[in-house]
Amino acid sequence: MSSRHRKPESPEVIFAALGDRIRLNLVSRLSGGGPMSITALASGENVTRQAVTKHLRVMEAAGLVRGRRHGRERIWQLEARRLEDARKYLKEISHQWDNALARLQAYVERPER
Amino acid sequence: MTDTIRKEILLRASRGRVWRALSDSAEFGHWFGMKFESPFTAGATVRGTIQPTTVDPDVGKAQESHRGIAFELFIERIEPQRLFAFRWHPGAVEPGIDYSKEPTTLVTFELADAAEGVLLTVTESGFDSIPLERRARAFSANEQGWGMMVKVIARYVEQTS
Figure 1 (tube, rainbow over the protein chains, first blue to last red):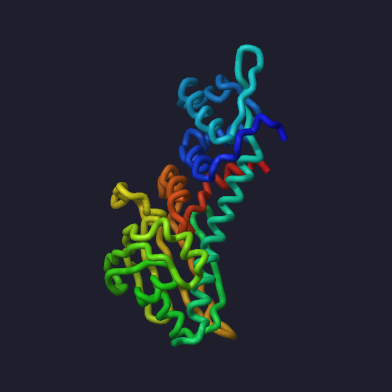
Figure 2 (cartoon, rainbow over the protein chains, first blue to last red):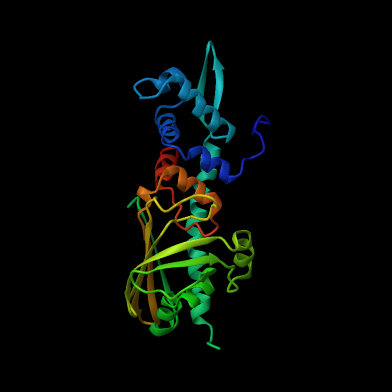
């Protein structure tokens, strides 16, 4: 693991960073098409390069993507580890359902007072 | 299904007991961690506040940070001993936000007889119509955020594995 990694962000930050249609679309395109430049990410989409840059910065701050200088451009790629974290939190949500039902179970199965 | 969460659990209790724990607003609140102002009746809007559960002390402790936050259940259907359904704004616990114009999800509890008790099936549906931003924020804001299965994100995340 590179020491460049900052302290892991909270799930709130990760999900907030993903909670936007344009950003989800960027994640989708990066996951399907590998590392890409901003020009490539903006092409064929109804967004400006400035908007793409802005959204990438938000996701970079959450540790979801990483940009590397390549000649005159920055090439952006997904940080798979952070997305794995996000996936874990989705599991956690399902787990909360399980928790609620476990409480119901404890409640109805114990002897009535 | 990208829109629905579905859970099943076998409860070793009588059907009447399970039904009461779901349909009586005081009992529901007791295990879930809410306090309601009125009974559940079909068509009613029932106001409640988060009141940490005592059924599971750890969960109760986690709910403390949301104690007193108000929200509403819109009771859709009550079929005694069989089905209880309500709508709500999933994760609607952020103070100062008007959720009233936003779409709701439908939570349904269905009871069926099983060999050793009652098979309870819970579904929560309608997530596809909840704004993405709300789903993300609701997730972080709502300890009870069952619903925040951000399927759209899951879809994208899965593509990377």
